[in-house]
Image 1 (cartoon, helix red, strand yellow):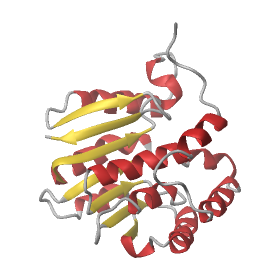
Image 2 (image 1 turned 30 degrees about the horizontal axis):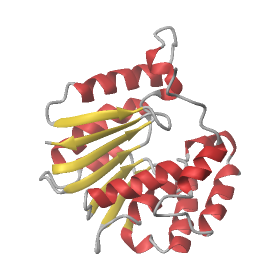
Image 3 (image 1 turned 90 degrees about the horizontal axis):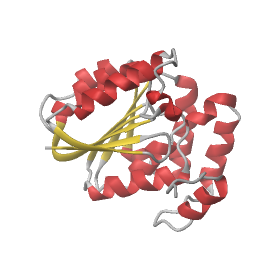
Image 4 (image 1 turned 180 degrees about the vertical axis):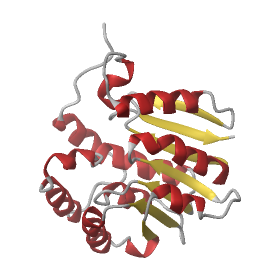
Length: 218
């Protein structure tokens, strides 16, 4: 008997409704604004994954977090609400349009004072960070060909015991389809192999959502 089943919207709502951090009403406004963007709206994480981001941020005791790929700001809200007192989240993105929605949402949700947004190629932002190990938690959810470069910049800057998370690592299951001629698939295959071989971390890949890698810096 297979232990897998189709995850419907009803299942997601059921699971998210029983977590410790139910979304406030303001999130409905954010989701509506995001849906109005059309197909791009599919990049927003669901409420169940949002709760996991908050929980992992709490588990890490994170005071310094970095997000690569902010979109309209829901995942950053979920990380920000989990930060320890006085904690801050640095968000890296290149879209003024999408992050304008995020800025408004952060204000409505009461987390704007914990978030710094830098609009620039993320690898440039990351290279400008202090070289020492000072980051507690990382969430990578941006252009897939850039994942390896973001990883290379971030791993040395994450403290021992800190967490690195990477989203969409299964790419709707296409990572195992060699016949799929897709630059994103190829980039994710190479990234997944890179993480698995990186002895600076210990990692596990969840088959939930669109695939989520959770790595702990040794």
